[in-house]
Image 1 (tube, rainbow, N blue to C red):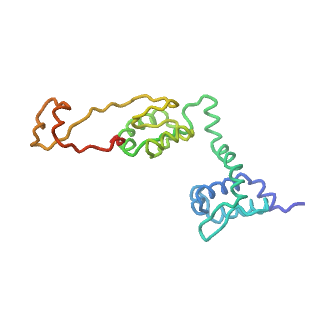
Image 2: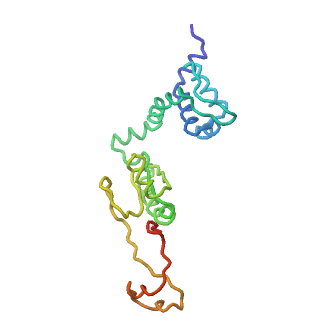
Length: 212
């Protein structure tokens, strides 16, 4: 007969793999424990049990820091999709069954957009779909585009100066150019100002690709 301890750990293989994956992603046993709402010794024991079962070392341990071994990297590539699939099973099932009030919505946007434009609309969306969890990714326009292409974001909100062929873009906001002058400036009291009017004055302009 096999020891009861070995049987116990095999029955809890998903917990072991989840502990391993979180530790690998965070690079820390303590941070993995915080995210899993477990004690640090519990996470360490689960990883050690997995190492014993596979007869290998999954991490190089240097004090509080850990780094994947080649075997650990190989296991992560196998285990991470399974763990993420199990963790998102309920949301994936609800989505397949047509339940739109569940799952995650990933939005990539710049800091100004997140702070000043999105809150009102996110509140309206959350009131209508309280079961959908929103993840905001504070990124630059180029990084938001990369997240879209990698299927890491459902959509991005931001300025678009150059329209790529592989992305659908829909304008949702329009801003009028504004001239800001000192109160005693010759153009300050004009109701209408043309480019010809301002051409004779020095201007302070933002960089070309800065939209805020």
